[in-house]
Image (cartoon, rainbow over all chains, first blue to last red):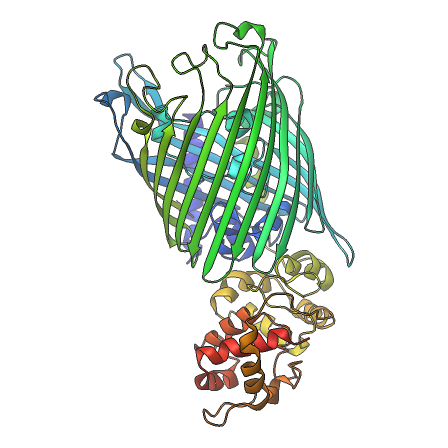
Length: 440
Length: 199
């Protein structure tokens, strides 16, 4: 509650002090640079080439703002394809909800120091009740944080942006939208998450978000070659603020290496990147006990992004494949794992078209597939999940989006039909998600 | 949140400032992100500045700063940047880009339009009362003290700006606002294609 009050106070102060002075209120980065959202975003959060350079420059382009603050809010309605008559398991199905919002402290603090710090209020924090119903309460947590120290050497024969990023979610620091933290889907239904509809994911796909602190050194050479090396630790001690309000579901043991290499090229209206990233992580079996034995995850991803940006047509595409191999501690065997090691692969492909950066259509395909396991997946023996997302977007204003998103499952947790042993089919989990997002 | 509060408090001690660094530093670290460090931008969204007439660059930067030039891209990209520039920096940036060597534009053009563009550019068209572009912009489209360099400029940018001249969003371009009334859409595309091919 204390944090809720503080966030309310800060938001209130922000609204009272900042908004009256702005005829055209736009978020903090836009206020800092004096530029429009479209300068950096194809559509939030997908970055343009200029947006990538802005981020790599440590958010330091422009002039320091007295209050580098922004906020966003999301309202939505989500409908599941089939409740099978068990409506209690799908609370708020089809109903309009206020999902919550975020406060951002974001921007330049000096010529070499800037940050993106997001704090999120979730109005749909679910508390299952003994009678089978779900109670929703408000809950404020830390969200993505990326704090940078940078320098930019720009000479006739050398352009080098280099720096350090301190962050709390592996890949949140990345500037291409083909790595997990800022990859598609950019917005997902909180309610669908409460219902438990979520494809399996590798550790690097959000499994450590807001539970770790990472420091990495990066360099972007001649606007072509990107190198990054760093390490992640559990967000304990002095860094516990970086997991504020988020319980550990995965606690890292010691420091775990992260790397990222990418090649970037721009020609005409086109830009293309191709790269690899990865994390080698030891995770405590018991997230509440840092001395418990560990599982060993090795995540390696390859990714590509293509963008065509012109007026009035823009098109973007991202593709990524993450391979995860895991060695499980012996304590799992026969309890929640069949074998001492397993693999999980995560494939994502997405294409978007935008007209005047105002009307957008996106089609995405996802395919998660991994080792058979009759203990972890006792009904189907398999985690395999496959489906698509189709989304239509209308930007009412550059900072205000209305969207309709449909997620369809061809296969869910190993089966097309009866994946849970109680007659539930993959397509029953299909969801229709109508949302509106506004930032100010 | 502790960090956020500290930063918010820290923020109270900061104030807005002019862009720091020499004009060349600003050009290479900021302008270069869209216009390229040598002014030969790659994307047709952003005009090529290499070898541009310094008087024109200076005039436009001042117009962005004063918000006199109000076309969409000016508003979206340039108002904020130019607002941080003082007179000396504007002059320095204009001199920097004027001194850069223009390279041949590598982007493709519709070659079927080039000869029509060449004819219109060099000789104008009596029927429609179109003045030859070369009169002000130079026979090689190198520009002059009263008109910008067009040689090597992105065709898409030329067409976009010609449409802007149909409005009052670039008030300093009084001559163009009259000339544009004599041009058709296909004329604009032909002119854009022609000047893009010029060295």
